[in-house]
Image 1 (spheres, rainbow, N blue to C red):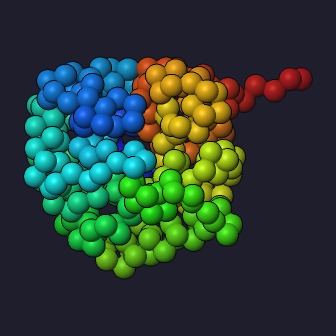
Image 2 (image 1 turned 30 degrees about the vertical axis):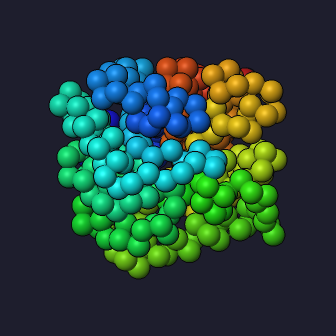
Length: 283
C-alpha cells in the first residue's frame, strides 16, 4: 500500500484491516532491540514484512519500552533516515516514522516517510502538528500516561476507558485547531503505555468505545508484557497471545494492527475477516 492508497483508505467508509510491521532501529527495544540496528538488515526485514502482508512499515529510532532513556536528536536521525532511504529505493510502501521529535519527523517525511506516529500525541514537541500540516500527512495520536521513563510507576485512573477517551478527544481537538485534517487522524489507546496488566485487558475488551469516536483505531498489543506476565512467557514466545488480542481487536472494530509477526498476523486476520464477512445463513 502506497500513500495515495492509504489516503484513499482513510477517506473510505468501508475500511479493510491493515497490518503495520514494526521495525525498531534501536539497540534496546523490548522485543527486537539490536536485531535490525544494521541498515541493510533493517531494509531486508522491511521488504520481508511487505512480502508477508504488511501494508505499512513503522520505523522507530528511539526505544519507548518502560524505563527507557531518550536519545539525542542527531542519534535518532542517524538511525532512521538511512533505513527509510533504503526502503524507498526498493518499495513505495507507506512508511510511518515513530517519533516524538518534530525534526526527526520532518527529516523522515522529506526522504520518503508518509505518516507520523507520535506516542506522545504531540505533547513532547509542540511543533509536531505543524510538521503534519506542512507535509499534509496522516498522524497517529496515542494515549500515554507519563513518559517511557516513568509511565509504569504505579499508573492509576479514575475511570480507565473514559480517561483515555477524553484525553484522545482533547488531543484530536488540539491537532484540528492546528490545521490537521480530521480525515488524517488515527487514534491509539496506547496498550502498555502507562497501563497495568489488567488495564490492558480491559482496554482491549472495550476497544469499541474508541471505534465509536469515528477515527481509525490502531492496536499495538504485539508481544507486550501484559501477555508475557499473564502467560509467564518471554518476548519471543508471545505470538499466540498477540494473535488473540488482535482477533478480539478486529471483532471490536480496530482497523490497523501494529505487529512484529506479520506473516502469522496476516493469516489470522485473513481467516477472521473471511468468517466475519460470510453472508451464508443456515436455512
